[in-house]
Length: 274
Image: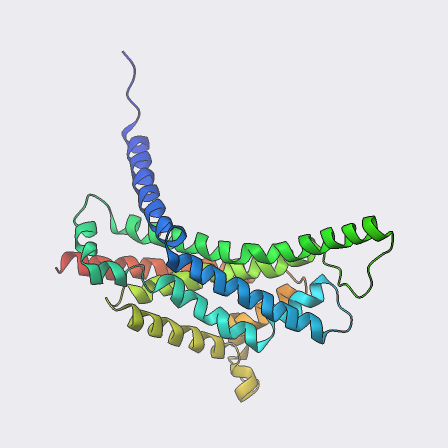
C-alpha cells in the first residue's frame, strides 16, 4: 500500500495550484484582450520615439549614455508614472464593478491567493512591456554586422550598443516596478471605480516622485538622506550609469511586501463585512 504524501506538502501544492490558476486567468486578461495590447503598443511607440529623440540630440554616446539620457529625460517620467495605473486600475476595481469579486471571495480560495495571483500577473505584464527595449542593442549589432558584410566598411555615425550596459537600467526598472505594481493593486482594492483607482494611483506616484526631489526644492536638511534613499529618479540615474546597488532592492521589495500585506487586509475586511 503506497504511503500517502504528508499533509503539509499536499496543502502547499494545492495552495500553489490555486494561485497558479488565478495568475493564469489574470494574465490572460492582459495578453488575450485588446486592453493589454493597446498598452504594449503605446509603450513601445513612446519608447521608440524618445529613444530616437535622444539619439538625435547626442553627438557621441555609447549604449550606456543612451540609457542614461533616455531614463533621465522628463518625457520618460511622463509615461512611466502612467504605466502603473493603466496596468492595475482594473485588477480589483473591475471585479467589484462586475460583481465577480463576491463570487471570487466566497470561493474556496484565500485572500492572499487572490492578491498574489493578480499581483504576479500584473508584474509579469509590466516586465513584458520593457523586454522590447532589449531589442534595440541587438538590432543595432545586427545592422552593423550587415553593413560590414554587405559593403565591407564599418558604418559611420551609428551608436554602439552593448547589452551589458543595459543590465543596470533594466534591473532598476524591474525593482521599482515590484513596488509600484503593488501600490497600484492597493489603490484598485480601495474602490470599485477604475477611474478613481487610476487617479489615486497617479496621485501616490506623483507624491513619491516629488518626495525624491524634496532636496532640490528645499535644499539639504536633517532628513535629506532619507529622501535621497527614497528617490526613484536618483536610483534610476545611478543604475543607468552602471552603479548597481543592493539598497534599492531591499527598499522596493520590502515596500512591495508591506503594500501587498496591507492590500490583503483591505480585501479581507471587505470579504468579512459583506
